[in-house]
Length: 473
Ligand SMILES: C[S@@+](CC[C@H](N)C(=O)[O-])C[C@H]1O[C@@H](n2cnc3c(N)ncnc32)[C@H](O)[C@@H]1O
Image 1 (spheres, rainbow, N blue to C red):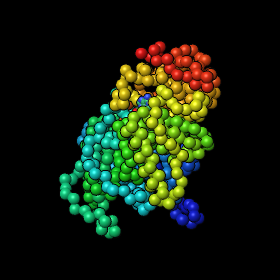
Image 2 (image 1 turned 45 degrees about the vertical axis):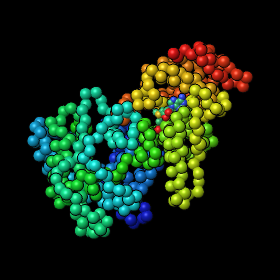
Image 3 (image 1 turned 60 degrees about the vertical axis):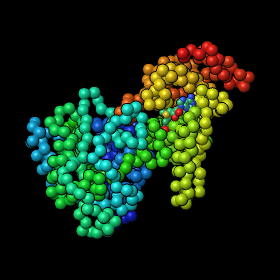
Image 4 (image 1 turned 30 degrees about the vertical axis):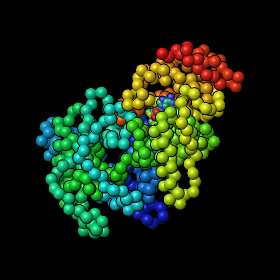
């Protein structure tokens, strides 16, 4: 699993370990691509959707924290592709207890220590034993904690945090941090997926956690822990790891959350799909909190982003998020502003010239938490038509996320002359199966294709809708 050796600078010892990363389900290949591009190693995509694994030497640990496609990071202690679980619950749990004392912990613990030494200090997680829930709608919210991947049908999943002892807090963290003899506080988090297990994640976390406590003489603490041990069980695959992130990296850009804020990691995946080029004009016409254009302006900053929404609160949130992020940068000594502007507009009548935009990338209302399914039947065709007008014929692209697949399919089928569907990435958005549709603008001239039969072309090539003859109602 891990080995020691020499690495840069010459003579320095560093360890080779396997890093595990949770990523938005559906974007595993995008994450693997990013790892190859930025760290130069191949990543293995796990059977357990939403995870990738790759080897690093410890001198590149800081680069791992710069990845934009990963949510949580951990260092692998050990893994088993085909763990043979015993038939009975008692036997299985007894074996898990034994496992704790047999694992090769040393290198992973070294990496955890190293990680701690340069990692930004963040506050301890609280409410550790809180049950994680899937959001009603499926799009991310500030409160929702569960970012588990989508599971194949018939596969059950549960997740638990070991509650091995019942004790009161006695810590004074600041003083304790300084002490070499400090007793470590830990917790075990077990996530389990599969329908052939005789035990629950709670039982596995409890018994494995008890054995870890005994082996290291650590103290269990569900909320103010120094170290989090992960026990990931997916059918017969078992991975034991130590967490390297305290909080998912997907929250990195946003300070003002909205009801359907999209994870920055998912935004990154969508942005990568459309390959922004220098000087591209990129629109998010339904920006909500601005998560997509903000991620773009940070990571693909040679392009210019325009974020718009028809809701005042959403526009304010975007402005605040951009401002907050810029301020953080200025505080750190960076003078550069972000290439992004925010506008209040109605997507169906954009104040943009025909053919003036390179890429449209947006997260459309699913019609659950935001808008309604009924309204989508009007909204989607109008959106696609107006997007087709402003995007450059022949080269323009759109990357659109929606869970309302039926409505989207119908709307796009009527736009054949203006949009060509390239491919679809199926993603899990907070438990909902959604599609990221990659479209290319055909060379069709707007206003002259059958799709625009209800639009009256203007002298400048733009058009307005003939409200009385909308085919969408
Ligand atoms: C799913 S949310 C976008 C969430 C966003 N990606 C985020 O991370 O916060 C869809 C957004 O579309 C906006 N919207 C709906 N109809 C619109 C229209 N006709 N014009 C502009 N924005 C619209 C809503 O106000 C909402 O903010």
